[in-house]
Length: 263
Image (cartoon, rainbow, N blue to C red; front, top):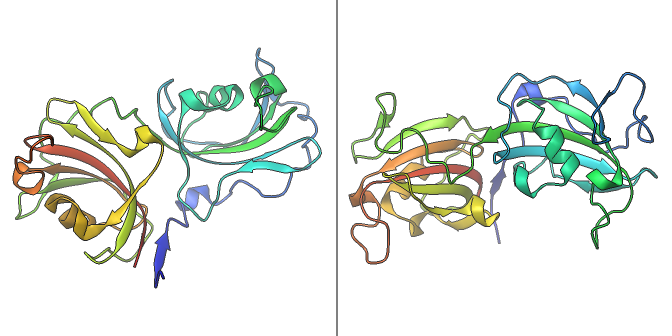
């Protein structure tokens, strides 16, 4: 039995106005003054954003609620969990079109005709869809190696062990995992020539394991993180696979996001 569990239950204060569970009063039709696109989508900005815009192949961290025209909520993310990590290339057309025009921190309401929603896909909600969509963060496609993949930059933190890291996003948690904790993470790993050799994001499934069961560099690095945090690690070979047959050799670079921890 899990004796304690910590999950990503909050996002920065700027995102406090959040996606609603209840159907909006303008569910049935976009009000006058709503923006309209040639594809047939209507939208309203409920909260402007100030951050990065996604590219066609970006990974987007989003929260969302969607309703059919009878007011039934037919799809949604769980705001008590880490936001879903979604590739734009895998989304319904209307969601993808909207995200390409949004900025991090933005919240929009979308009115999607069926052709821009599930378009008659078997087992999916039929008809038009009204969707509240919140863009929390944009990340590059894992196949695109970081610019600093060849070596830790001058502003990275270097530990006595030789492990180097940079905090890419601060976390919301207050406790750090120990070797005895189990954790769930998203991660991508590259060799120093920029080759992606592993990524939970590409599998579209987070990875779960006991902290003590991974390579030494991860054991050390994870114990310094908190839930919600994302870090880049430069792991020297002595803290990585140490010449193990069939494993990537040399220094390895990992982006790691700590989604949850428990005992």
